[in-house]
Length: 375
Image (cartoon, rainbow, N blue to C red; front, side, top):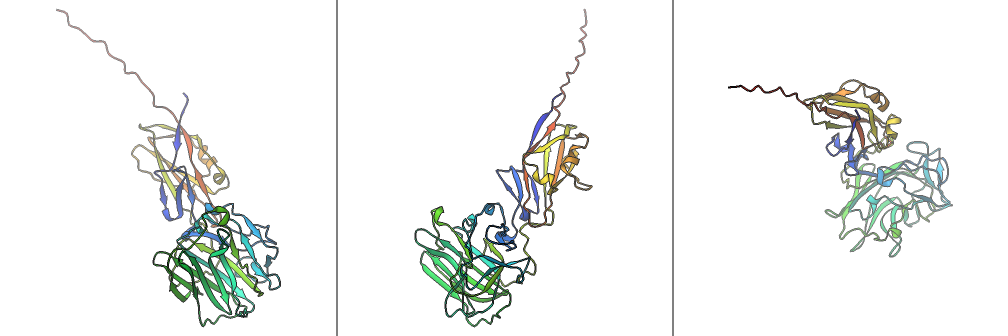
């Protein structure tokens, strides 16, 4: 008897914890999502030159981001905060590097938090403004939507708003040269607050009016500029992170490289109803639209079946091939548990699928002959 196909979608899936998993494609997939509203991450762990993939991009919307570096990008393997290298702007060369297509979350963003580690060989800039990172827009006129800069050891944040430019700058900072410092700037249009932090401590705060300007033309929404400055000064940057939220409280700077995705094995649970008791689920026909993360051990599975909809998962999670090798499961309900296994740097995606189900047997009840009394 041919089997029926039961579609596996995730509209009713239970995500544990929901903060680390997200539904997408109208319930057709479940994905790990970036932690703590992280939308951009750069470890600067490349090998040489701008053509190497030294950017670790968090969240799906940043995948495929183009990197276009100036000829004066360099890496310094002896000086780095985390990992194997850092971005170095050599004084004689000038500009740093450019991200030509910023993540969508950074365009017209109502609030952002930008933080990174920076090290300066000399904090004196001769009263000149040295750009550290900015969100530059080309059209309708060249100007930065927002910019972080440094002048003679004082950190500044500039917002280009619908009501004009607003600049917040520190005063009296005692930064040490040739030392790694953690710099963070955050702003929000909800309350119009802007803040600057150094090594986790609040060092400047202010307010602004209007909204941060950007370009409606996609061609004018590039780029992110990183240490793109003509002021000659040896400077290094490492562990650049951007969050699409306002982090306005003092904090402890990170002491290890950021992992954009959870490494705690979150789970997605789903129950399928055959509609009748003691249905036969053909596990050998279990398959998914994209099985990449099953085959690389990025997703593992546990199953349970019953007639009373009370899932109980036990035993070790199985690979998809191991699950397919199991005998058919007889139950009204088929319960599936998907375990997302990540090293913290790798996105995992669970796509829709299907499974074979034997149709309910149709049995004609034999009718006993009627006995008629004769008179």
